[in-house]
Image (cartoon, rainbow, N blue to C red; front, side):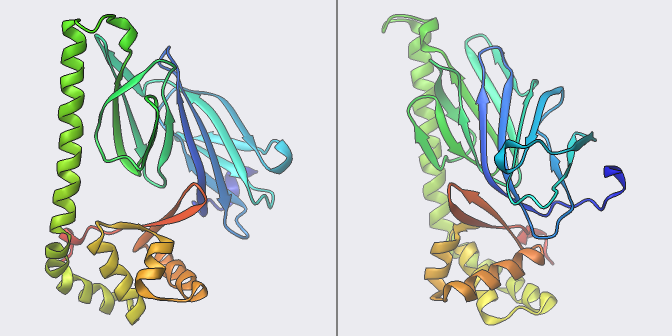
Length: 274
């Protein structure tokens, strides 16, 4: 009967944790909050070869689901909080002493916990937060993390260790340089997008606050916390909430959780607008 219910992506990702094990398996622990009146939500899974699936609501009661096209179709049964746990392989690769994990995080950043003793040596994007040597909060988007195990090459004079340290230093310098250049170009990019913003405003009948919100997101690189956006626009909380909700429903932005805080990201490619 689940297959005949209307499918929906109507939920917000509250928490997303990714546990990487030494054998290359990866366990995903995701908490979602279905929107009101959603009967069935469709949750895409990361990677293939999924096993050990567990879907629970409040009180750790199990919910019925169907696995279809690498997604879970979950019957919500009026649950306000759903936890999904599963294990997948095929996300981790290694070449020599260098290990790589690639994640597609379209709706939310993730806290990635690498195996004990692992040390991060490279990132494809600027992290939100780094905790120790093996835990990082990063995303959303397509994310690649490079790591190694220092214990594999003991000794400070090991040539391999020196190479890894040099690569890590170069990577960190590149990340810092990229962040600086993005910030420097943000205002110049805003003037480039002014005409496109006017076209969007006309197409979607945006009000002044919504236009200011789109412009602000462009100025800060495409994403911001909801609190910072509200402060920048000097709006009451209720007004800001309604504005964000409307922009999300129109598909212009996407909203996700970082901890307990709402983050907002532009969901349109301004370069493709004519």
